[in-house]
Length: 265
Image 1 (cartoon, rainbow, N blue to C red):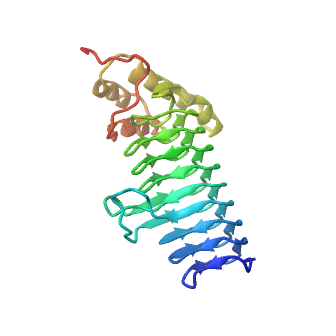
Image 2 (cartoon, rainbow, N blue to C red):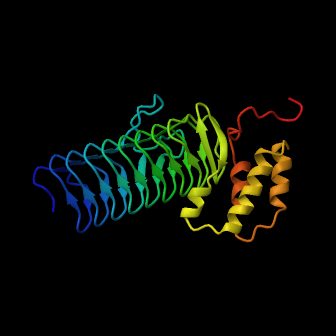
């Protein structure tokens, strides 16, 4: 199942039932798990560890060193989980020693054509990145997040679990869990209700999150006051705690609704 025209470094480790197409390069330091599918013209560079059942489409470049000026060729890593799909032209860079030394991608993610994952990023599980969505270095993306086409995320931002970033959005602040943002720059527009329903959230859970969203964004309370109200609400499934924790963990401040002003501004 390995085309004779593929170029595989002698030290690369290839799992069972792997297929590799013509003119693909599996370079030094790559470990490719069982049942992976590598199409033609794919480049996998290392140190990179790839789990099971991953698919790489033509012209994907995965595991290359970052062009960041701070990077000086150190042997940093890329770690990829299971059941991911990397469509045409996707680029994923390894970490830098100035940060984690590792870029990490979870499992069951879909990266559509020409998506870019930069150095030291952490992407969770079950995420969807539509065509040309890009995340810069040191970005964290939670489980089940969805980034629309051409969405741009600058360095050190975070996208919470179950969040939705609309296509063409520029996200300058952190996005809390469960929140939909849109615009240039992006603002908070709603709870990601449709996404939550698709994932089987109960109507009671969605109702509680809607109330929390209104408290956070429409009550005109300061952030700390809003979080105290949210944390006092009944939370049998733990979703409100997840929302609150994502806001408290923010390093850049969270996205706001349009024309929001803190009391006293």
